[in-house]
Amino acid sequence: MADIKLSFAPMESITGPVFRRVHKEIYGGVDNYFTPFLVANKNHSFKRRETREFIPYDPNLIPQVLASNPQDFIWAAKVLKEAGYSEVNLNLGCPMPTVVTKKKGSGLLRDLDYLDRYLGEIFEGEDLPNISIKTRTGFENSDNAADIGKIYVKYPFSEVIIHPRAREEYYNGTVDMNAFHKMREQLTCPVCYNGDIRTIQDFERLRNEIPDIHHFMIGRGLLANPALALEIRGKKDKTGTKILCNYLTVLWDEYVKDSLDEKSILFKMKELWYYLEWEYPEAAEEIKEIKKSKTAAEYKVLVKKVLERLGE
Image 1: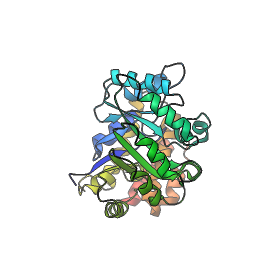
Image 2: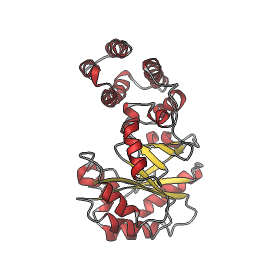
Image 3: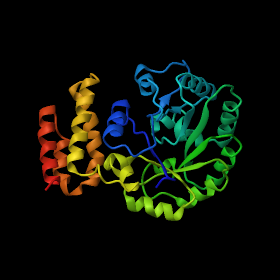
């Protein structure tokens, strides 16, 4: 599908630079990756961990920023432009309470008058890179999806990425395609769809419903099946248990090279297995044991056991 663009959505604590590098090397299939959100704070300084997300420059990476204050976002966008990035993504999608209570992420959707002023101030800034936005379709519900779209259309976004759920829904239930259409109808810039693409069947259903959308962002579906983007593109040469085994082995080894301690690596790998379990329900009991593992040795024995079963 040459006309299709696929992006890997960020997932805090999982899709950092090591993960992105390994996924690209072993699977690939996506056009770009988004960083887990970078927090633009009032001190105008990124944490060392955040700086490592976007330095060195990666042409396939789009930095994503959280900011409650437009001046903080402008500062972050300028830093990222200086680092070589031509696009910065403003996150209005994160639903987590620790983010929302600070008027960041989808918390900005609670007060639409403030949102309008916020965006107006951003686009008055000079020397900024292209700005895209990732958004939900409402805060408490999606009843005002069209009103939010009417605010976005006033500003020159390079793209609007729509996750058709309200903040209060988190990731529960089904996506609201009516809300997606209501918001999208207000927009004149390119639109990307994001939400609940877990299988090829999910993707094909969406292609039939929104055939003129050419950009899709996938998050949890690619964590569960790292070859999903390749399968969507009709390439199945990198699927199967042997490739998965190599992927998990290289990922562990690269975390070691990155000087992560055993406890931190275990945490990241067990987080990943939470999603892999979706793809391999037949090994659910064994995967539960992986998620209980306490040491690297125990983890590796259990993973070998699961992969041997999957290879049967």
